[in-house]
Image 1: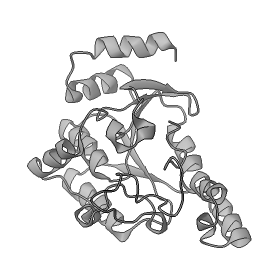
Image 2: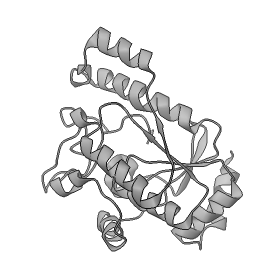
Image 3: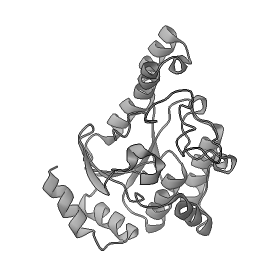
Length: 233
């Protein structure tokens, strides 16, 4: 994909609504459009829109093996409500076995390097498999989620995964997300009501205080860009 392709998408969809853009992509890139969900608030907005329009967009999730029970609960609720397929990708068992046998189950607390190794095995490698062969990757990223995401574009080329990334909720505020979920009765992770704004693996996520950054609860024991490698920016 070239820069020209990104510009063409931006020009074509400039006046489209979110729903119209998703429908256009599904039609233009037939069977090559995927959406990755972790069942957070933003992802649930996009899932609801895809399901309600019955769009031919493949939805997948990454099961790291260390998720909250509340995450599995909203996964199940979403399947029941929308009657859709959500494909699950797991980390390679051998890689997880080697990591745990060599460094123990909680090595990620010991260093940023160890944490990124765990994230790579449990998230990045399965994501690479899930994205392979596709043209458009839809995400629930928002600019205000972190300083690291302020310079994201609506459409951009992800050189690491060699795919065009579409961030439809880029300019949405958290309140807009919450209002959409409440208005449309979309299933939500119960942890959101307990100040878990950004939810990942259970050992790596905590609730945040009112005065803390949205991403402060992720890998709360370290100082980093609060990213796992799924999104390079």
